[in-house]
Length: 262
Image (cartoon, rainbow, N blue to C red; front, side):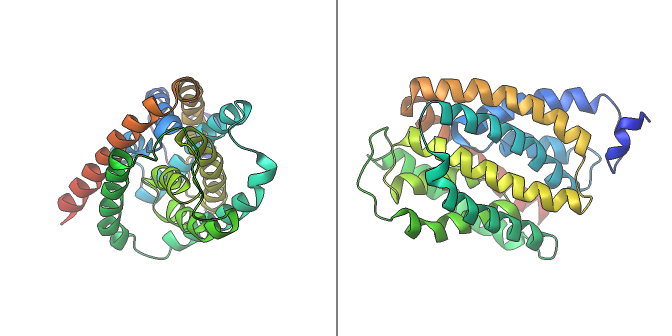
């Protein structure tokens, strides 16, 4: 085994590295536009010889890379302010770290029952709500009032993960009154923050393939660069349908996984 692969706790055939990196390009594109890149990445990773907890940790590394690229692109487009959003990011970081610690001690089975219902709600809201446009609306919650919501989503992201991007984007539109493209930009910042918190927990615990995760991260960054470019250029008319498709796809994938396990 090459010396550099000693950073990874599980031995994989070398062909897995470029193959999974290519899959991460598609995952990063989807995640940058609408969230839910895990719909592509997680089933593929679970089909490898990696243990489930290592799959989760490795996926967090590539997700952190992809969401960081998308965050930079959306910030450059002027869709959110790092300074203004810093208090919210701090709450998200703490929530995700708590969730990542909890998943190593608790079963996620209960979330597998609840999440499909939540994702169906997200898809229906996206289709039916007239507010899912690029126009800002009156905020129902202040930034401080939104913090418990954001912290809860971040805990879920660290604990389980699928759909966290949709939950961030939809609640930022519904509760904070942001236009969909602005909400998507801020979502990437919050998602990147929660991913980095999870990466810290999983890598310290030796539950991540570091080299594989970084290779996949390069693919995710490529996909995220392309996806964020299209999202900022075309706005809600691209984001809205993809958000619906990904929400429905995640729902079906989770329901299928639940039935397969029973």
